[in-house]
Length: 362
Image (cartoon, rainbow, N blue to C red; front, side, top):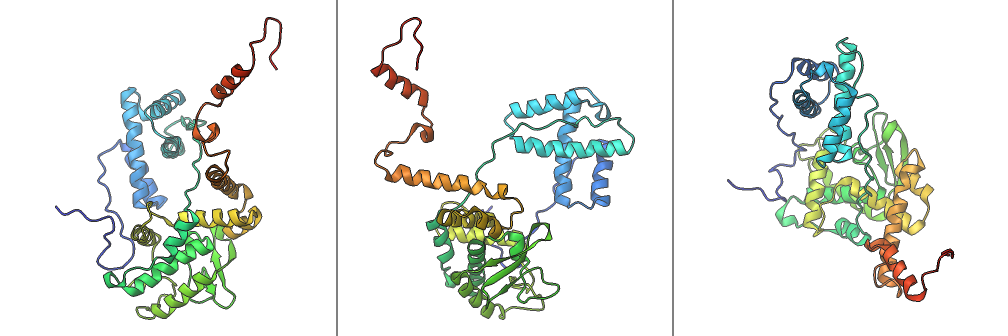
């Protein structure tokens, strides 16, 4: 059987494909009723329902092992199962997602009058340190944006489109949803558009909040090239970014195309759209030091959300210091992971005598 290359793409550029639904084994009757509820009444996506089903299968297995009915599960059971999952190496985020699914199930059972209380109430997943957002270096981001695809091995129109997408994601810090919502022209029904004369992108962000973002020269030039090429396969769809059928691109399709582009450009790490947003924020902050401006550009409602980039900025400065300062050529213990206390103790012992009885250490 032939394996597909990681760079392989669909024969036609028609948007993201949906994964085939996973077959679900038979479940407890109450679980089946709940899944039907979220599928029909709450109208959740098929993939979401499948993930709920998998989490509830874990709940059923735990209950069988504990020899307890689903409707008789208690808070102590939940706490024990959380401890077991944590001990088995599951991340705090993964446990939190499972608990969320279990909590919804027992909330529904309570509304149906089948349980007196929610056993997941007040049960929390272990806290895990939030990882820093992944951002490209300036050189990597410029390498990706400036990459010229080999038009002899693909559609040159699609190459122009993908380059424009990359320039806007990195040059404006747009979210993927804001990018796919852009239309060619401003209008009452348009979620977003780009004013070429003013060099501004007007987008609809989280919470249906509109904001304007400056568009740089490189992104404007790329956009003008794409607009000229877009007429080659445009139909009636007002979307700025369309596929070969003339319909608006999906976020999933942009993720696939960007990942392919980053690998073709020679980057070691596959790039996703939000990584370019992180890179935009980090690079602007490194150059300006203006956290409030970055907050406005990103459309964050709270500056505490933006402050994560100060950690990225310090990480960048620490690397520059370690590489350039003559007294930092050997890694400092704090950043290399070496025990600081042991080194300090060795220095102290070499130059000081142990104080005698009754003498305090200073």
